[in-house]
Length: 436
Image 1 (tube, rainbow, N blue to C red):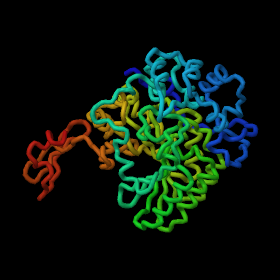
Image 2: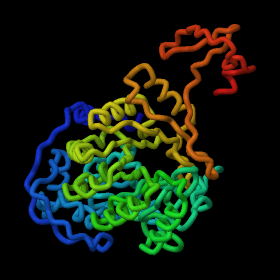
Image 3: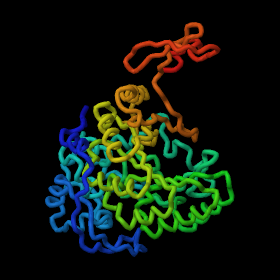
Image 4: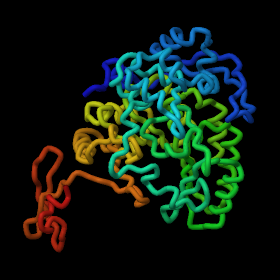
């Protein structure tokens, strides 16, 4: 594999959670997207890993530790242009051409912190491939679409997707701190504009719809990334949802704890604790992300009583190997993050170079089941094109049936009989072929 986990990453993933702190000075003002925040700097901040410090000193020598650890500084100093990339990375001709051609939605954006985890000169390194454009993303393959999951079709009001009976997807913002090149919502993030405005008036329409539908008990807040909102705006959003009596359960979907972990401030966690029961799904990709900074961000969220789950997209040549997925899942558990979903990469326009055959996902699940703790095994799902929702897939462990006995295969390939009188599973013609 081109991007097998480095030895250093394996060592980092194996380390017990660290709680080292650095002192921080006052943070500077927020950029325009979060300009209404009145949060003050914390007296303690995140650790700075050795790799990040070397990167900071080389490419941002004027930045103090306090600035580097200020999430608003990270937003203001994102790498967003060809010139910015070339200052840091040795680009291939393909990367350079793709960045020059990029326009419209799904802009390029990488926080300095997250850039510090990427290879500066190896274009096949996994995290780098997920964020620096290449020419393949301009190729549209059969089955791909700008909105393959039919979210716009299922939008009850702008920004609110009501697909499942008792839950809704609340798209709070189109802004992300970093932009994954396989983004499911590439049509609406960044500077998409048009119908995707994500204004406060749009929020109000969503609140009104939820309040008028008592069957809605679960709200997933996503975007964009809702943790790029200021504490005040996020508090307002959560307060309004909590005021709706039949809303029992609120979730936040975010990649911020991974790509900008210093955003998880004490003021943020203090605010989030007011809105329990609150859960969070975090987008993890690779063991290289399991840094001391991420150990700190997940610890703060878990200590705030927020159950954490991971969502990982299966990506060709990046994490589609059991030698990468297993250490990632183990590292997540040690950081109190339950592996939740392993997603087949959605057929977004221009994403074919990221997509694996479905058989690869089943192979990885089979490589986990029985070979590690069940807590470390996510559910492998395909989000069905056209709005069909998440469909779980499992390796086929049913061999067949012999009379009243169901014949099963275990993780080692051994076969076992389970007495199942009156059962029909395993008796279907061509059972194994149909299931594959």
